[in-house]
Length: 247
Image 1 (cartoon, rainbow, N blue to C red):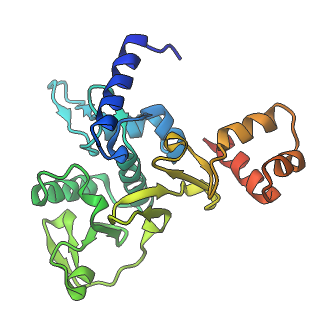
Image 2: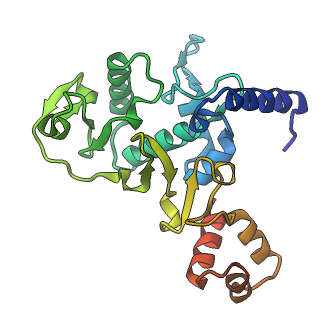
Image 3: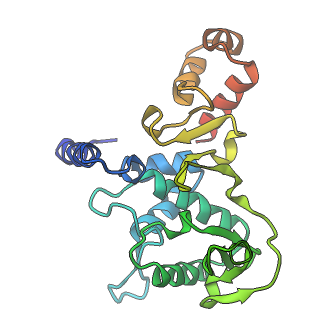
């Protein structure tokens, strides 16, 4: 991969400037689309379309707008918050929610929270396998938090019970917003945490890079030696290697 040094230098300066001015590190554009694709198990083309939009195929010259509206369009890089939103969208797609319902739901949420680039992260986002259902939009009372609004149908109140909450792979900080993501294929052994190893995958509870572990294994070191070096169970070493192989 050829790196545009000038573009990389500007990006680094931009991130450093925002970090030094106290910007939330979870909002910094640090992941390339290709990198995030590997971490999340989402095809590069799909994630690129979600992140930067795509041209319509009717030769009109028009484009579909990005589904992830917080992505830095100049550098085409994702923040940690973007990474979590992409995880949510992938989960919805895997539950067979049609993309048109996802986009309609996202448009509704944006209309309700026009100044929030990541409204899905502060709301309880679920699905019944057909539509996007959101809790927490009606008020702070417990009954209002439990009530579900169908974002894909312009805010219609849903009386059905929640079938599954797939946000169990997202860990939240004291402010209620995400700060840790357990990748789908990491078996909760692998985690991505904003502020730990620059937000790259590590073995949960450590600062040990899964990429380094996998590189050592591919270089010929066996599981037992790696487990001994890192003072970890062999199962965690194996899970880290398996995760990296799937990326």
